[in-house]
Image 1 (spheres, rainbow, N blue to C red):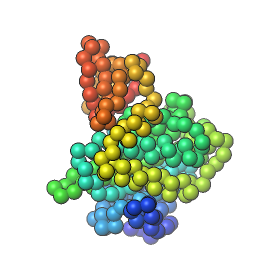
Image 2: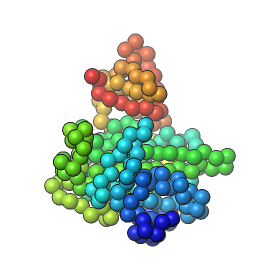
Image 3: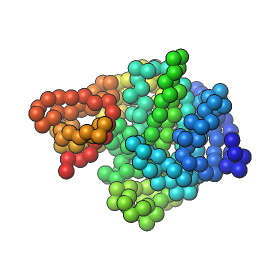
Image 4: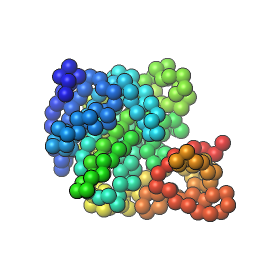
Length: 262
């Protein structure tokens, strides 16, 4: 670990786990940093890596995540996950965590765009990138989360100004990012405990309440570079989405992306 990049290292009691928390001044991405240092960090699990900025922040499908210094919360959590049959629910509990964290700091309600984006009035404010390393005896999960906190509209690149929003734009006030991090960490591990107790219905009911799509709404669904036009029907008890294709066939997906029908 480069000591010039290290700002802080401490322990955080999540209410059931003692997490090793590391704050960096800068890194390429917090997910990348954790993966590179996994050999040493895995012995300290669970761990949290936060950075004031990311020079190559990543979202899903290798998209860039805009990571200006001190304007957003950029964090990755590393932990062992013992329930391979529930891996598809990790992104959902991360989405719930982000939505509840934002509710606490703004007093507003937020929606989940299945499976892993958080929206406010149709604009993206937070996202998730989960990477799992599956070994014979265990699963190592890295959950990267990003929240737009202190950006003004003019701070976003031109291609994001119409589609992105921040907590500051919602409330008119800047926030201390370091006070937000402990809330997010504790909420995530609270929901992880719910998942590991196999209380799936609690998770799914919360996702359904936060879901941004109406039953019957026309959407375009993307998976593995293929797209279909369909109607959104529901989120099923396993966390998958049920769609009705234009042929009337009902299909279930556990990964992919949804866009509004053009």
